[in-house]
Length: 184
Image (cartoon, rainbow, N blue to C red):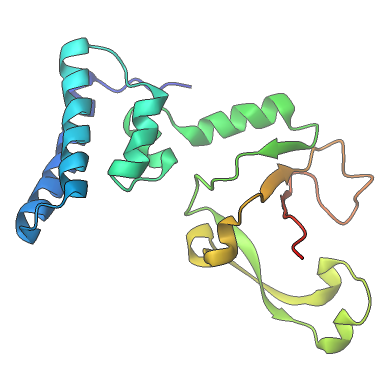
């Protein structure tokens, strides 16, 4: 699950990000603490790669999401850890059973089906399956449907297992379902 990235290539990648933020901070001239912290963090990553001659820890890579405005997937990919591949291995090992999956969408450009047009009000007068309520679907990247309600607290996601589709026949095997708390 690790694609070898040379030390020089990794340093060049992080140096490029560092230079972009340094240029941006130089243009804004206010020298905010956030800019200083960001540049210090990126500098520490490059020093770590140059002098310790080791790979970056997951904690350091996760810090990039905070300091460099990268997604978790992008931060790990910079260091040679493609999370897409890890998802495939996890599915191969556990895909037969329904399980909780990571709530953060690593694949912001992954296309998903979104309802575009619903049937009339009469469709909502009784309980119905989604397929009986949605008239038209559209495929679009996950990032385009992000909204305030996208990451509600205490919401988690499950992925239906390939062996668990009999009990919930309206959900296809492999479907990802959001489980949200009931609000008063």
